[in-house]
Length: 196
Ligand code: MN
Image (cartoon, rainbow, N blue to C red; front, top):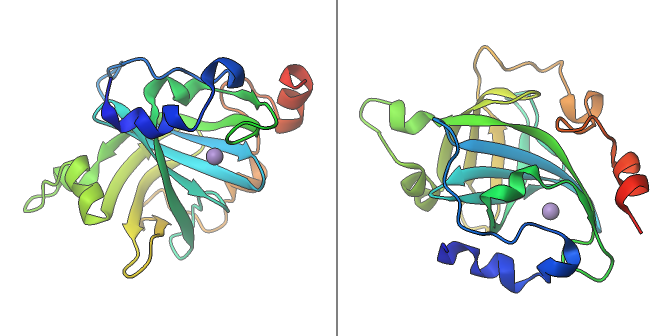
């Protein structure tokens, strides 16, 4: 198992929470996956996750992603998650880490834009170390370039839509497309069906 998942397992009682156990997994397709999970925990936030070297690198984004390149969204790094977490949707019971409802808000694949740039060629691992990640998302709700940039002198990162043909200041999918891309359910419906 990748050591990257030690923190994930340490924080959880997986038998009780119903979350994936993080068994080893390899990428299923030609391109690595990304997922954005809407997580109604103590405070509502969006967990942005990118597949890198067999795990999901993760950031919690309180306001969720924007499609407007002028908007910068705070993105707080969180522990790596197992790949099969990408399809986890349900209710984490009270008293457990991350207690609350999880909905798969967007799911798709991505490309590492820096790897494709002549004169750059940075791997995802290298991009994470440098605090400068640039990916092209192919999701159901989100498409186009997104940058994740580590702020100087702070622990936080910023999630920013890159200025490309997919940028659109008038769209606001966090508000207009609130439900699950996996099941079409809202947070309330998941709570009603899977909550205690
Ligand atoms: Mn979360």
